[in-house]
Image: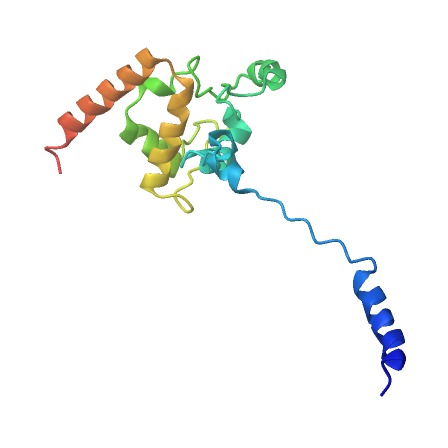
Length: 162
């Protein structure tokens, strides 16, 4: 075989090899994001989901109580408004055990107007305690301390009954 006959084949291969090459796929390094604390999502409070699901539609998503736009009508009908769970309300004046009972069993209104449903068929005692703990974020430090003292007195008084 003559060398001259192989040269065109080599030129074709050489041109093909030296021709435009496909662009490499760029890679992005995201590892730096995991070291940033502002990028780490904060998990929700254990009671937040249950509060928002079972309580907030009446008591407000920030614990503010009944919608202000509905209060006048409720009062004109002689009914009591839905209480807030924030620092302006009275939830912090009750021991945990009573609040758990209210969450799980509900409250019967004597006139059957705006009774509070009990959620014991979907929530357990720990769920109720988590909801109460979630509501504490809206209370002042003094209210939190007062409610803890009331709960402690309640437990001391009724621990001997069991």
